[in-house]
Image 1 (cartoon, rainbow, N blue to C red):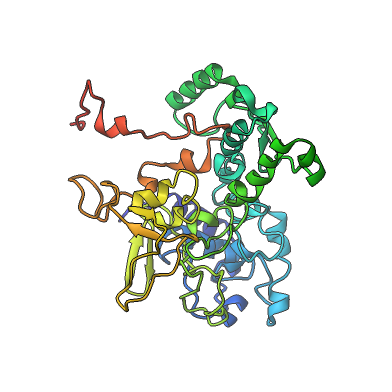
Image 2 (cartoon, rainbow, N blue to C red):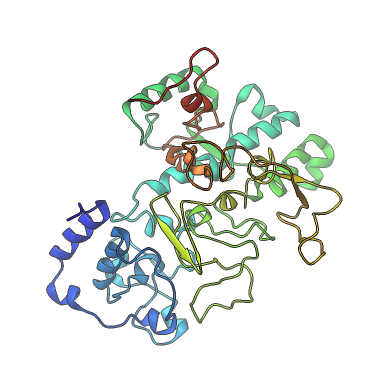
Length: 406
C-alpha cells in the first residue's frame, strides 16, 4: 500500500476525530445542485481533495466547496448561497463570507492560508516581491532622480507592510538562513523591515517638481501587474489574484471552457477550468490536454513587459509590422497588447533541447522555486538573493564543470 502523503495523513486524522454522523453525511451539496458538472479543484484521489471534502462534511457540504469559497451550502437560491459562511467555519478561522476568488490577497489568510491547508504562505506572499514590487519601484524611481531611493534605499512598496517576525527567514534550510543573514549584513539598505505605499503626487505637485511624474508612470504602468490585482485583462493577460495568479489556469481569451452550467462561456475574465495547477506532480486535465506544473504562459500574463524575460524565453520578439499570417491568411490578434514575431525560443524552453530536460522543455518553476515565488518571510527590496537556482548550479563555471552526483 502506498504511503499517504501529508494531506492524506491530515485528512485521515481529521476523519477519525469527527463525529460519525458528520463523516457519513452524503447529502448533495447545495453548491453542486446549481454548479453540477464543475471540475474538482484537484484529482479526487489526491490528498488535498480528500482533505477538502472531509473538512466540508463537518460544515454540511460534502463536496467541500465552502472550505475555499465560503457561502451557504444549504441555500437553494444564488443570492443566499453566495453570502455568509457557516458559523463554525468562521470561528475556526476559515472563510468569513462568500469569496468568488478564494486566492485573492485580501482574504487568502481565511482560505489557502487556513491552519489545515497552506498556513504561512499567504503572509510570506504579502511581503514578497511578487506583491510589493519594491525593487521595481526603487530601480525605476532612482533613474527619475527621486531622492528617497538614492543609495539603494527601499522605502516604498505597493502597500504598507511590516516584517513582524524578525530578520531570520521563516523558511529555508539552515544553510540558506545563514547565507541570508550574511547577505542582509552586507546589503542592509536592500532588506527593509517595513514599506509604505508608493506616493501619488497631485498634478499641482508634479507641475512644481516635474520629476515626480515618475510616480505617475510607476503607478499607471509598472505597478499594474502584481498579485493583489488582476492586471489589465487583455488578451494573454487574464489571471486571478493572490494565490490564484499562478495556481489557477486562465486562457488567452479569458473564457471559461469547463462544464459548470452557471458560468457564461462568452463572458471574458473567467478562469479556463476550475482546477489547481501547482507542482510537476499535480495534473490538470482539460479536454484532450493533460499537463502538470505551471505553464510558462501563466507567468507571461505578467512577465511580458520590463525585461520581456517571459516572452523572450518563448522566442517571441515584438514586431512593429504585425504578427505573421495565420492558416487563413489573416493577421493574428495581439497578445499582451503587442504584436510578436517568433524568432527562436530559449534552449531550455525547447521541447527537445538536451538530455536531462523534462519532456516539453523546462518550466519557469523548474528553476524559480517556492522561495522565489512565495518569498521567505522577509521583505526583499531587490531580486538580490531572491533567485535560488542560478546557471552555475547546473552548468558549473568556466573553471569547474559541474558533474552529476553519483
